[in-house]
Each structure stands twice: as structure tokens, then as C-alpha cells.
Image (cartoon, rainbow, N blue to C red; front, top):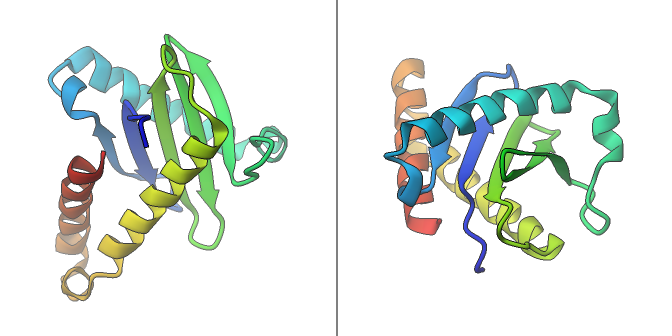
Length: 145
């Protein structure tokens, strides 16, 4: 998989961000990190919109092209069973095929499930569980992307 996302955001069913993971190359650029946080926030409006159901990629109905802004193409996916929202942004300089985007979302879901279902994290108290979940997700995203 040759497409590296600029950012990956996970937002829970209550529209509370779990994390906004920024690519290692861009992590130190405060303006980019802030921009990706804003894009994640803007994406929530798209998930709430009735048009969200009509904007899917042709071959992968779960993954939606949300918007293109400031040189970044932003895709989103709603996991209906849990309410989890996955948002991924790519620099527009790269042309990315739909199949690669869909595979990337599948990979992100698998990483999330592996971390979320870890019994050592599940056994922690609520506050510690959330912190540990975010830490582990960041670690795994660093390894994978």
C-alpha cells in the first residue's frame, strides 16, 4: 500500500474525538496539526448531513469522499454498529485509487478492533481505559502508517 495518509481521526459515537493521528513527517508542524484537527471537526457536519448517504465511492459504499480543502482530500467512514467515525486525509498531490482508500479504511478498522478488544485495556477503569486506548492506537498507527 503506497498511499500514506496525512492524518487519521477516530471519533466515537458521541462525537468526541478519540484521537487525531498525524503522519510522523508532519507531526512537528503545528499549523498542519491544527488544520487536521479542524478538518476532523468539519467532517462531523458531513456525517450528520442527509447527503452523506449519497456521496459514497462507486465500488465501496462505506467509504465517502467528504471534501477537498487546502490541498487535502478527506474521506470518511461510519461504522454503524458502534457509531465510530473514521476520517482520513491525503495530500491532493497524490492520486489515490478507490481500492487503496478502501483497503486503508479496512486496515484502520482492524487496528482499532485489535486495540479496543485487548483484554488488558478493557480491564482498566474508564479514565485509564480511554487514555490507554489512545496511547495504544497511536503506537499502532505509528507502526502501520
